[in-house]
Length: 116
Length: 113
Image 1 (cartoon, one colour):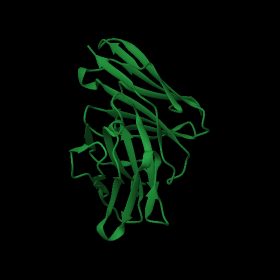
Image 2 (spheres, rainbow over the protein chains, first blue to last red):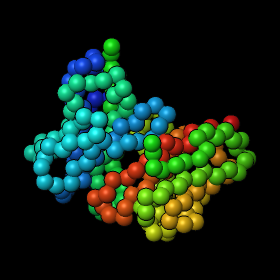
Image 3 (tube, rainbow over the protein chains, first blue to last red):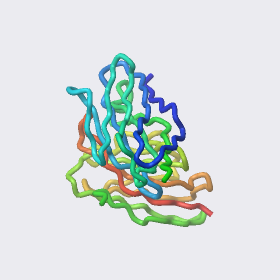
């Protein structure tokens, strides 16, 4: 069965420091991978997506992610974190073959705190 | 600014009330979704509409009744809810293709008294 694991429930970084959020997936085919961010009281905003091609994907707000098939990972990175990056980050994979193809499988999320 | 608009932003209702949540998008998307999100959890899919027809119902209790009057609008009718139904209800939309990302609204915060 398809699944997504975000090993870190909570991460704290200092403003200006680099960031890496981990995402591992279990999938029987080539996955479509997404990272979403959710600020308090808001919906989910798409940061970036990977479908095929270049395994290093650039997104909005200075984020990037690298798809590593051999490690079944799609880690999110940012070279210098800003205080406004404090939020919940969700990794998601689709489509859900064998079930509803519109259905995304979400990880449990990583809550990012940024220290001044 | 979100391109998926949800109203109301907050809703408090009693267990015997009937209310509706509304979602609107003007991106020409033909798939629309309702999610339920509890605090510190990922969104849980409830319903999917594809070309205005219900395509997925994730075994949601009948006290939640979705409706898609047209390709831009999605409603969620609520009746006889339970306190455990208190949550953030998110609407999303996407193009009808597996590689298209979903675009989310800011949600309706629902509290059941």
